[in-house]
Amino acid sequence: MARAAAEQLRLADVVQSWLGRPVLVIGDAMLDEWRFADSDRLCREAPAPVLTLRRRISAAGGAANTAVNIATLGGRSVLVAPVGADAAGDELHDCLDRAGVWDRTVSQPGRYTPVKRRMLAGDQILLREDSGDPDDPLSDLGVDCLLTALDCASEELRAASGGEKPTLVVCDYGLGALPAPVRAWLVEHRDRYATVALDAHDLADWRGLAPTVVTPSFAEATRLLARAGAVRPTMHPATSADPAGGRELHLEHPEVDPADGPSELTVGTAPGAAGTRRTDGPTGEPTPGESRVAMTRDGLSVTGTGVTVNAEVGAGVDRAVLAESRLAELRAHTGAAVVAVTLDTEGAVVGGVDGAPARSHSTPVPASHAVGAGDAYLAAMTLALAADAPLSTAAQLAQLAATSTVAGTGTCVCRREDLLAALGRPAPDDRQVLVDTGHLTEIVAEHRRAGRSIVFTNGCFDVLHRGHIRYLEQARALGDLLVVAVNSDGSVRRLKGADRPVNPIEDRAALLAALTCVDHVVVFEEDSPATLIEAVRPDVYVKGGDYPPELVPEAPLVQRLGGQVRTLGYVPDRSTSAIIDRIRAYGQEGATGAQAGPPPAVETSGTAGAGTATTTGADAPPLTGKAP
Image 1 (cartoon, one colour):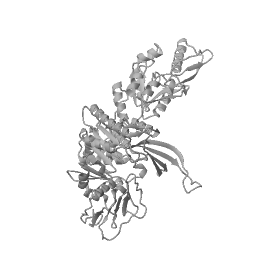
Image 2 (cartoon, helix red, strand yellow):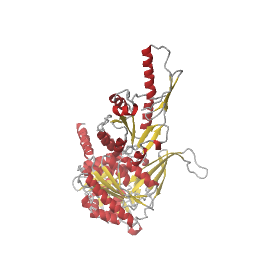
Image 3 (cartoon, one colour):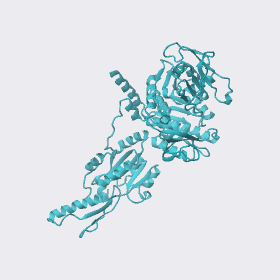
Image 4 (cartoon, one colour):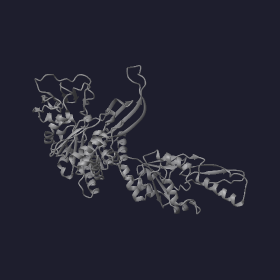
């Protein structure tokens, strides 16, 4: 038990050590779109389900999701990629901004942003529609712009890190973002980056890069071996761990013209052995565009694009055993110091120049839960190696990051606090609610890196009442973090008059901080929150009132900073001014000994924004005032 706790502490220390590490991601960025529908009948025209769309969400995909995972895990993430000048590109920019990724993507007019649209019913993916033509090459101008962005982003990261060489992650999924001139530039400027991670469908395109780590899938690894002519037989000992029962495993490389597509690699018993290749029956989800591998239900074979793993004895060939036996060859063919062969539901096999291969395991989940898990694996592996963690540690953290993201449907994103929680080491509780401006900006930056949206509101909040509570709860529901800026005593006096505030700033701030819907409270001395808004750069700025958002004085500033303005309607019969007048009315009646009955009825409206309040009664004059 003590040893396990010590191991978890060591892993958590590595996670803490990579905070702020500069990472540049370049490659094929795409948008993942998820459409969730209900279906309770078939249509009349065909035996197909009738779908009723309930909600739609979008997320960064491909290289963009790798950049998001690096940011949410605590790294300083920059993305360089071609993005179409279209609606999908706009959504992708929003996804990157929310995650705190430095968006250095290059707009490509006339080129579409790749999109993967998934339609689901009952957590089951019914179909996927892909758009964006991978055969549409970048123009010469587009390539020049991409190289310029790559050069500038590299220098920007280095300058922001005090001269430290950044880490580079290359995500090449064959969608045209990395043409030959870009690959040549990266090879030529390899020495500008300390650690280089490569995730590519076709590893043969990257000879000369000398990456620190490559993370091929089983299909990608076997395809590389086939193309390299690595076809000599391999004999495994006859042990219980040997899935072929001691039989000779054979790699067959059919004579196929490379121009016709990737060569096929068949892994099975040696020629002449009993049994023949068997790939009939349900074959899961072989997807040519992604070179995925899926286990057949009969347990005898694994099929995928260009790859068939098959054995007639036992449960079939153990892909982990096969991958482990080829790690040295994969390192030689890629020039990588570390090779991590990912085996989807079976985990991964990782090997370096020194030491025994590391084997990690995962838990099988529905396919809709695992989209993007490889991006989380790549991000954690890269950050760990960049932080000089031992290979075994990097392998553990990478697998844990991938595994901890697959709890629900959607594109997988691993956050630093989730990874620490999985290690039994929750992130330190930095819920210091009352903060100063300097500390607030640091806290906001950390939350942005974790992919959270920031909601900001301000007011005097002199006498806290139910209208305030309702308003703040509604504001909190608009994002992930609510920051409340409260006027100082001097500011309130200038705005409300010499007899305000009723409660000093210490009391007002303490009451706000005690509310569960409020994450952070900051006090400001100015009459306007403009300086704080510039520091916080909120995603959503909230004011109370029944006027349109464009009439909010702070609206132009918020919108210039990339945020949106929301106004929340009044909560009836609630107003600070009315409460204060009621209290004063009680005091005046008590001083004169008046016993004329209860105080006048009050009709109020107002929240933390601006509003009016009126009282009605036989002798009560109209009252006007602004709620804080």
